[in-house]
Image 1 (cartoon, rainbow, N blue to C red):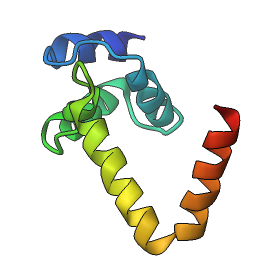
Image 2 (cartoon, one colour):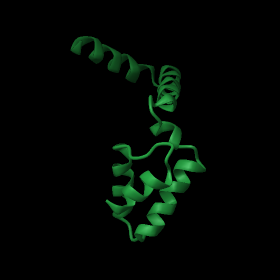
Image 3 (cartoon, rainbow, N blue to C red):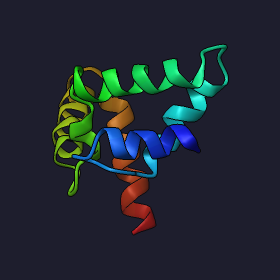
Image 4 (cartoon, one colour):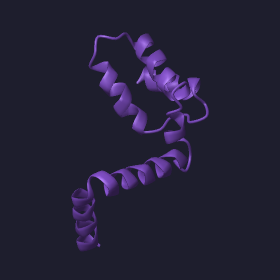
Length: 91
């Protein structure tokens, strides 16, 4: 919990976002110290620009979703056809 609070204060552009708890939880299962986990996640968010995923409105998620769709249409057409068919049946 203290890592999430520190990240919310340390990366004010996103603050606390629920998705961060999964990332912190993943690293808590390692032998890394809390301080190292904080700096590792902050590095991922800032230097690797993953903070764009968590910003309000999730602008980067829309781009990544589009890129995944294009990739799947080109390399996994059967999978995307199946997913679209299931989506249509549900709705």
